[in-house]
Length: 144
Image (cartoon, rainbow, N blue to C red):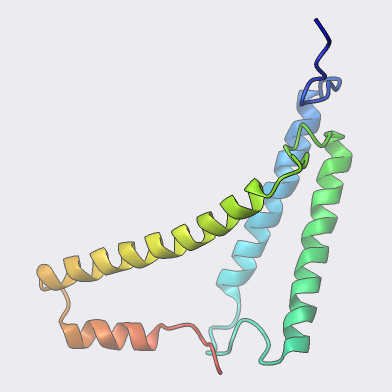
């Protein structure tokens, strides 16, 4: 019987304290970004730029910041591709699943919003006018 190579390459185990440093760094990044977002000025300006160049700059800065923190976490843990579940499986299934999950999450969020709105109307905690006013007032700052 011929030998079948394993799908996941064996790697030496990572010490638990290294994983803790990895987890703390990633969690701290998420916490800091959340706190900064919640405490920023509450002006009604778009979160992103009105121009393509500004959008690309914002995305680049955000990716570099996360890449730096993720790189520091990786250096602390010395995790392999298999430990991080990043090994490419040579097919398009992950890309298709990502697209399906993205659309599914948007649909689920819309359904939850609709159920909450119907519940508020059914319990008469809000009227249709006040609900419409709430949605208009709190819509995201997107300009054409």
